[in-house]
Image 1 (cartoon, rainbow, N blue to C red):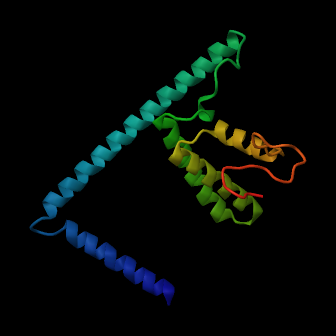
Image 2: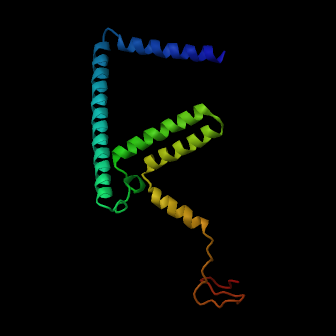
Image 3: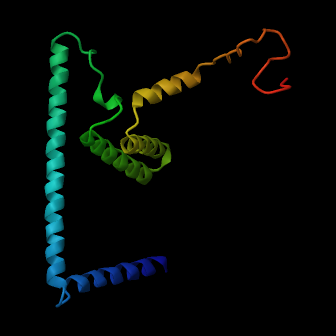
Length: 168
């Protein structure tokens, strides 16, 4: 029953779309607009792919030069920095989305792990949050820290003076 209903809705939507584009009065304008939008999207995608490939090529070249010079750890890897370039954010977001979908399709513990990694990657790409900062926060949260004593307090005293009255 559900598959028949879904198929009916899909067929109705497809029919309405065909009618919209083949309309004798406004169809020609709509088709031209759709074609122009498609060309524009293809041109933007080509430009983004070109920028991304040049950016990655330059980063690899810089890494190779640093390694040959004998100081490979001089610079920080760009993927660990905050403020990722748009090209890297696009690539990371796309990879994260694909990993999430693949993990959901696979199922089981491997699929859940893959989906978790994909969601994390997608979130980092969307928020432009520094992975280094995240690792620092996680490592600090794992450490057990003693709370600091307020100023003017005496260790072992049962009463500590704070900014409020009659505080015990």
